[in-house]
Length: 463
Ligand code: SF4
Image (cartoon, rainbow, N blue to C red; front, side, top):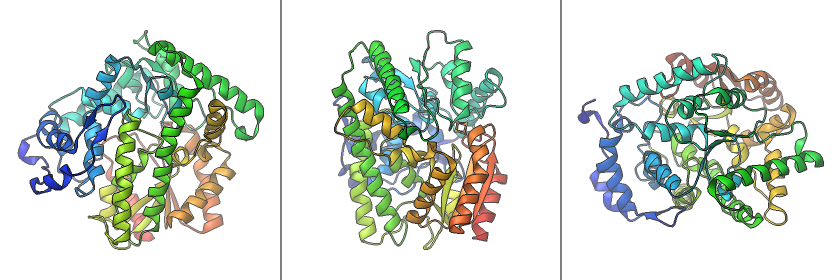
C-alpha cells in the first residue's frame, strides 16, 4: 500500500496534544504526550501502516476524534504492545493467557501479565512490521486457518489458540476460568495439551455454576482455585505472593472499575453522545478489564478521559461523525460487535454491551480476606448467572443506557451464547417491549461481511 493512502494526524493538533498527561507504566517508566505524538506520527506509520488505513469499514481503524487524548493514547498502547510485552517478559513478568470476561487482578498480583484473546492477537500482530492493510488481513486469516485445522471447525476460533501455538508468541501459561460463557476456551485449553508448544503450562480455574455466589462451598472452592493460580504464577515469576499483593491489586483495579462506571453514567446522561461508539468502548475497557497488558497505563488514561468527557457533557459537545439523536443500540452476546463507523453512518450508536460490562462494573470488597472478596465478586458476574438473573440485570442496563434496540450477536460455534440468545431476548421483549435481533456470524476479524451489516442497518431503519 502506498503511503499516500495512509491517515496522518493533523500537525496543528500537536501542541494541544502535547499538553496532555503522560502515560505512567507499571514499571515506573512513562511516555510523555510528546513521546506518544512522535511515535504515532513518525514511528508507527512506518512500522504498522495497516493501522493508518483510510478505509472506513475496517475494524481496527483508528478513531478520528483527535481532540480526545484517549483516542490517540489507546492506539499508542496497542501499537507498542509487542515492544512493551517483550520488555516486561525480559524483566521477569510471565505472560498468562486468560479468557475474555474474567478479572485480571490475581494474575497481576502474582507478578504476571494477563492477556485476553484480543490482547494476544494484538501482541502477535505487533511482531509483523511493515504490512499494509491487505497483507495484514491475509496474514491473520492464514494464521486463523491453522486453528481451524488444529482444534475443530466447530469451535468459534476467537480465543487465539493459533497465535500461541503457531504464532511464535512466548506465552508462559494458559490459565482461564472455565466458566460456561465460552465454549471456545474449553476447546482451546484441551487443544493446547496436544499442540506443538510443549513447554506451555496449562491450568483451569474451575468455576462453579448455578447461584454460585450464594453457596459457601462454591466460594471456598473458588478461593482455592485462585490461590492455586497465584501460587503457580508466583513460581514462574520467582516470587512468593502474599495476601497483601492481592489486596493492593484489587484496590488498583477497583479504581479503574469505579472510573469506568462514572464515565459510563456520564456518557449515558448526556443529551448528545460525547464520544463515538469506538472511543466509548476503548475507554471503558480500560477499567477493570484491562486489555493493554499494563493496568497502571490504563488507569492514567482513564483518569484523564473522565475529565474530558465531563467537560464535553457539561458543554453539550457531540462527538464527530455521530448524528444528533442516534438510535441507541445495546449489544448482548459475545465476541462480536458491529463496525462502529458503519453503525454511526446509518444513524445509530452503540451505548453498551453485556459481556465485558458485566465484569467491569462488579466492584470487589476491599476489607477482609482478598481471596474471598475476589471469589465472591467473580462468582457474582451478572453475565454468568442463570438466564433469569442475567436478563434482569441486562434490562436494568438497557434502562440506564436509554437503549432503543438490542442486538444479540455471537460467533458460529459459540455454544452457550447461541443457546441462551432466544431466552434472553424473549425476556427483554416481554418486560420492556424493546425490539431485539439475534445474529450469528462467522469469526470475521477485521472485516465484516456486508450481510451482517445490512441486517443490522435494516434493524436500525426499522427502529
Ligand atoms: S464467541 Fe463464544 S465461544 Fe467464541 S470466544 Fe466468544 S464467548 Fe467464547
